[in-house]
Amino acid sequence: MPVFAWSRGWADSVGCTQSSARKDWWISVPLGELLILERRKAGRVGIVGSAAAGGSRDYGSSPLHRLLGLSPVLDFLICLSLANLCYLPVWYKVIRLSLNPDAQWANYSEAGCWAALLGVFALTVVLGVGAGWIRRQGGGHPLLVECGRAALIALILHCAIALIAGEAPTLHRQFFGFPLASAKSAAGLVLTMAAGLFLWMARHRLLRLCRLVLLLLSPFAALTVGETGLLLTKFEHSPIADVLDGPRHGPKVLWLVFDELDHRALHSNVFRDGELPEFTRLRAEAFHATRAAPPADSTLLSMPSLIAGEVVSGSEPLGPSDRLLIFGSGKRARWSESPNVFSRARELGANSGLVGWYHPYCRVLGAHLTSCHYVDPDHDSIVAAVGRHLKLMARVSSFGLLDALRYAEISGSGSDVRRYREMLEAARALALDEHTGLVFVHWSIPHLPVVYSRELGKLGLMRGGDYFDNVALADRALGALRRGLEDAGLWDSMAVLVTSDHGLRVKRWDQKFPPPSEGSAGSPLVGAGRHVPFLLKLPNQRSAVEVGFDFNTVVSHDLVLGLISGDLRSPTDVTRWLEGRRSPAPIPSAH
Image (cartoon, rainbow, N blue to C red; front, side):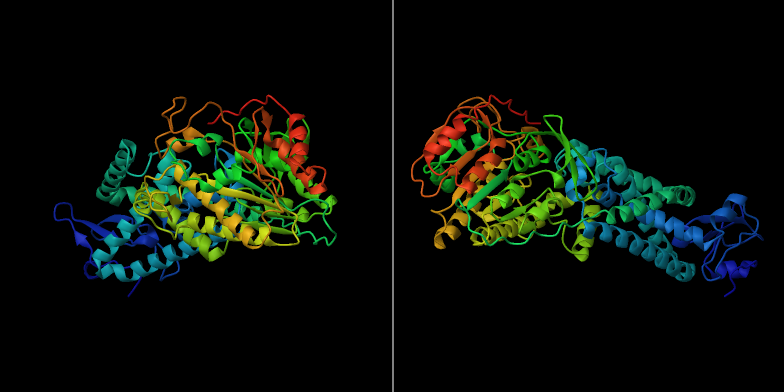
């Protein structure tokens, strides 16, 4: 079939229709030409562009029409631009397009970067191939052309939703509220449907405009792809330290940090007697503080403070593998180069192992550790990362509908559930390792999301779960570790420290669940302040010791080193040591 035709007979053969009133010709140019409908006068029929010809012409069209249909290169740029905009939710997550770069620190992932690049180029190819196929087949199949237009409109709406949301990964929380549970969410869904209907009714003219807009936005693809490629060059992996063979002076130390575990939660009237058996059992044979304050109210600052042994008041990301720490004293240093509890334990002859999440500990501190296990769903294979990216884009386009279905019933197959299980297995294996003198575990619970139902006693994601479900899971995790160590005959001879990086941040949970009230005897959280648990069991300790004065848990660094060195051996030693570190430290506000 010739690429260009000038006869009415050919126009009829490709399915063009003629307006009886105005004698105008309409020719469909499918997805490759962004489904632009060109209107031609009788006797001046032409097609704007053709992949089959390797080029395009437009007889009698305007200069703008000739520009928009002149080159296959422009078609490629438009497909690339559309694919890149479809990946906006992923770009917010993978690279620092967020207004808050610190929020993206935990999301840096080589697998995620490669998956984003491959996904954009794969979608570009799919759009280009689909365009060519519709162009070849669409002449005699008007329904096929209309389906192509509908698909294009759906992609454009997806891009618009992601752009309006701003912070796409948390779209359903920050912009529309809990999935389908608020007026904002419902209004957003209705407005999107209305916008889609408007685009469909005005598709003949608006899709031409969309083509031009996509072409103008094509340089944005160079920005996202280029920044991601540059980011991939900045990943640095510290080699794991060699195992030391010398004898230790002190006992093996197990240091457990539960993310967002509030001191009041362990004494909450939400739990009946016996519902937190492991924390209750540990408190009966350990030092337990009632006024221990965390060094900060965020994981971002609190964890570096605990590990460095000095309050960190600020920090700045230095790429995916390091941060600049700003200490309370005014000193500035790279986290990877600052002395820390692991490097100092190594100087004392003890090997250190770590299991953690959020901070990429292995990239930052790997040189001081003989074992490191970073647990996060975003840091696995490229194939898995591609699947997560597709789910993320679907979540954004559905206005949280998929999240609502996700929380509709218990499901133990979610990535957050897998993260908990992986952390538990890694922590158990590390705690049983005879070569490791210091075992550090930064748990992802009871931090959001809720991955346990205390009512059903099962792991899984369920809408309606709350903070106290995850607190109950923290108790289960402590019990699982303890049983494993008791079975191996190691529990009694170990020192165990249990604390948290910060207390409950009520406003964070208010986004999904009613906030726990405070202050009254009948409230879920009894007592004032933002204190965190501080439970320390010495080797062979059998009795409880209450610590009722103020101190900052940043002293945990020195305390652990004192245990490893053998300087702190008895309850009397520890009591005297803690007395010397009283500090009316301000309690960080929860926000």
